Image (cartoon, rainbow, N blue to C red; front, side, top):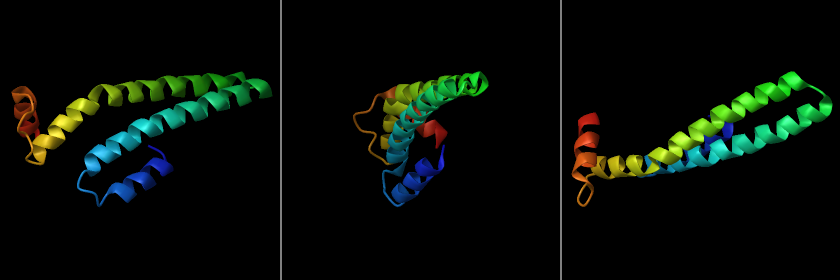
Length: 103
């Protein structure tokens, strides 16, 4: 996670729902990084630097994988957050049991 994401996480640190806000911020920041590296690919290609473009494309794949992972887990993270905060009523029993086991 980059400096901007860390700073944003600090701003949310005092919030009761910091886990959720940090998850959202991380998810959004992954897409910011993807866009940045896509732009760097164009710059590298225009500068004739194939190696930099190759490295940027590899980093894009890593960032996309992390964004996908976060996107796939936001609902689970929210379920577990509710259990940890004592708001487990109405959540699937399996999610409550699994989240409680982690605490």
